[in-house]
Image 1: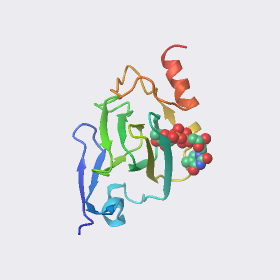
Image 2: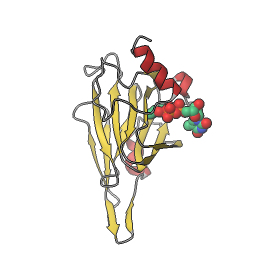
Image 3: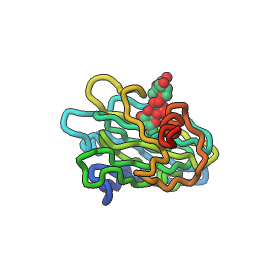
Length: 183
Ligand SMILES: Cc1cn([C@H]2C[C@H](O)[C@@H](COP(=O)(O)OP(=O)(O)O[C@H]3O[C@H](C)C(=O)[C@H](O)[C@H]3O)O2)c(=O)[nH]c1=O
């Protein structure tokens, strides 16, 4: 039995952490640990801790994002279903500005991704449906949609290779898409 995580930093986007739990399997199914304070909180800046859990359930072919803000740390995973998790470096002063990295999250790895502030978060549901989980760490109040930045899922300056050309989008993400198309 192991509760340890394999924790590595992305080789492409500095500051993005990849956290792989060990998954125990038997004839009933699987069990794993997604969070241990003493192992994960220390990945945050001193004085910051995870204080807000958020879930979103989506049907297949939904794409959410690209959203972010200047202060929230997000530890994200898919607790059910398979997703294409994409992080975009939106830090204007970063040498990897607008570069992106994709992580497939599913029941075979149940990996978690720690996304620092000013990184764009987006994900595509490649299974019939999926339940997405965030642990959030931020100072002060939660930044809701109106306080976040939004990039279009298909922004040509980012050029993410998504598995679809016709995702299901929210009004907010459709607006970003149409703006991107100059409509
Ligand atoms: C968290 C929460 C939100 N809401 C409302 C607020 C919004 O009016 C609406 C949609 O929320 P949001 O725009 O945050 O949902 P997404 O379009 O999935 O955006 C998310 O997608 C990307 C990938 C992110 O990383 C963002 O954190 C997150 O904004 O639900 C509620 O009513 N209750 C709640 O607990």
